[in-house]
Image (cartoon, rainbow, N blue to C red; front, side, top):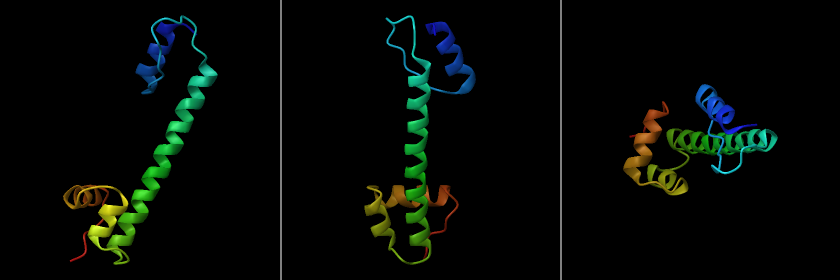
Length: 90
């Protein structure tokens, strides 16, 4: 597929298929597979965060332990947890 077509797909589909600027033909099967794998990785990471947030909200983990499990500062952890719709236990 030519570079202009890939750029249009990126724009309209909100994707980020990389082009190296040299190749005129892009292997779309490979590009779609890379996008699919990236989506799976993002889903796994989001699921992990949700599980940690739920564990903190239920009292299974302290806020400090939840932050540690996600490699975040306590303030950033609380911010992300509240943004995801969870409440911080008192």
